[in-house]
Length: 567
Image 1 (cartoon, rainbow, N blue to C red):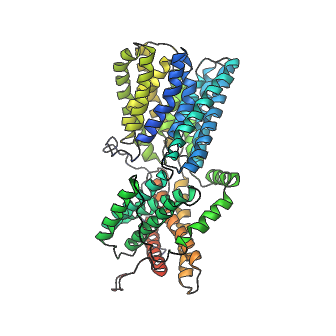
Image 2 (image 1 turned 45 degrees about the vertical axis):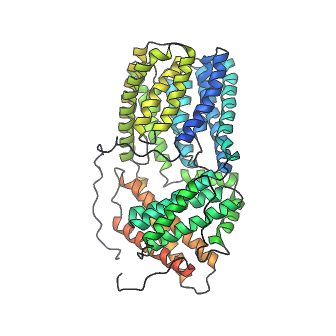
Image 3 (image 1 turned 60 degrees about the horizontal axis):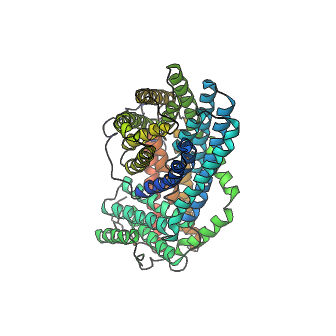
């Protein structure tokens, strides 16, 4: 395709979706794991505090208990390290909030510190790709702690409570490894098999991208799982078969409906608690298994603090979208807090948390999140009004209500964010009750007003702080895809090319194609940017998948159909 092809002009302002934003989806595959984990992690410290009549300390143990929400898609080896980092990050943010609260009672200063903390938490979560629930839990805890009455001498004890609850959360999240240590890898492999089956049954750009992303995620899960075990070896072979099916669809030759059925059957057995299915070795993988051992050794050599620092520095480098999102969070949270305070709301930190929750990878998604958050919170205050008489019957009833909404929030949020917010809102309002009963009408009006202020001001800040780096990321992804494809084609042209080098080039090309599609999807929903090179992206994806298919044929993974004259 000529580089001089005319590119369509693109409007700098997109229509914001309304229809479908509140539509319910199927629940996530493991929705019950974070739901049960946070209930267990919260129930033990809450009931202990109830037994000694110190429920006023629940906010501090809750900081550690909510750490149990993180890491459930990660292999246990990485999950253990990740949750330790989450606990330490939570305690560090709480320490800043508590020391600030003990040093000043200036609302302006507290809001400024809350906005800075929210921006820092967003930056670290994005840079480390911590995954859901992301920065919002950190911001919820630290913002609430900023406005809690505090004496300097109380701070060490409160931090110790948070750290102890966090340690218990760590035990809750990694404990299942004793019963099924390869569970996360099995689920990642099953998702890759299902996505590949969907791509075989209905080949197309979207299903192909979804399959490539799922395969890439499965490899990363297996590489992060630690030393290979017999089960992981079988999982690696299953991922190879998913990759083989994807390569077949990339060649437009079709892998056949029988292959799709086999992949689906393997996925079902992989998810189950029985033995992992043992597929026959795919061609070309008997000796090297697609170089995964070499890649695992390479990752082990790069592992450690140096790799983590490099990942964070790369996320903060010019061209990354992370700094723009952090600036949006800083500006939006500060403005939301100050507007809420100016309106006389007694809990301005709710506006800060609402604004922090709005920001998504692009403006269109941020609009959808703002709409979902507003609708869910307004319904949630109605639920709180219905529940508060029951919660005030007895302190134990209050504890049980909070645990119920903890579970409900995680059970519902994967259906749609607004549905989870319906449970989160009464839970947040009930937590205030631990420090002492307040007029329900005041709590309801404050929360409703803070929701409207936080969502509106947060969205305006997102519009006012444009992400002009979105287009640049697409262009860099295009260049990386071109370089990866050129490298793979050079090796294809060399009859004596090292099989491991060819496999490494194919993996690199697969990764760049996934990044290109992700970058284009994010940029497509952003405002105030130059037109995207849509024709170039389409051409790069088509050429990249043809090269992947040719590489797979060279490795013996697939057999391409005879040429029929079609391009």
